[in-house]
Length: 245
Image 1 (cartoon, rainbow, N blue to C red):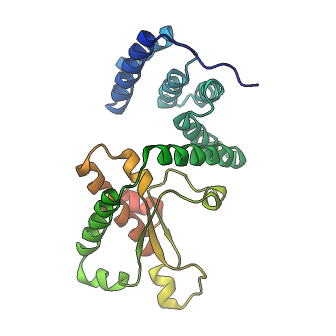
Image 2 (image 1 turned 45 degrees about the vertical axis):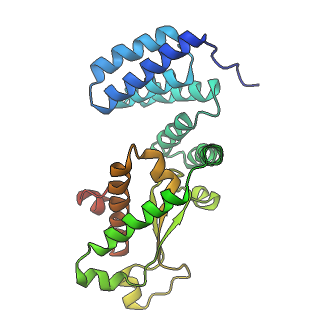
Image 3 (image 1 turned 180 degrees about the vertical axis):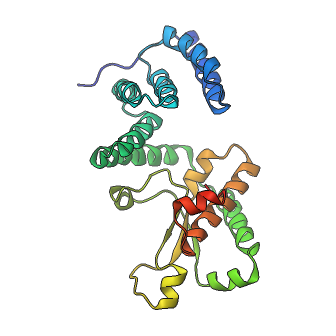
């Protein structure tokens, strides 16, 4: 039986939410010293709260203390099994340790939780999809002519999130895009591939990380170019070297 979730008064919950937001900003701005102080205040208020334990895990990972990070994350998902961010970070940590079965188990939970949240929030309005399609088209139109000719038959399609089958194949449920099918070289060489060659943009994941239209437009462009890099035969390290992470 799962333990009861941490219970706070309304006032305490407001203070905790402020501390968590501040700590996340400090971690994002690479200020671990100040983040540690803020996280310490959150720990004093709600030491077993999932969101606080997640912050402790992120702080531990900054100094490569994966044991402490894993302990905090397991405590976080025990406090709140529906905390998708904690489940996702735990899955990533387990992948790094080579526990692929554990990674898949937690990532399947992430997919289910994120999908349910999408339905409740009505993610993916027609306007959102039109915006993403427009900026994907702009990214393709920005390519030099000699590259544009080679991708004429490579469609870019939108799907909400990766499928269960993909996640079971160790694919990240929060990935922004996917290239599948034959690469440019394989197609020219006549290598058979039963999958259609295509680029998939996962619009719910793109929307989840975009803070505004400008960020969304930029991320759509980067994701399209990233997946095109795979079509042209580049691996993850290659596309990262090009700044297309």
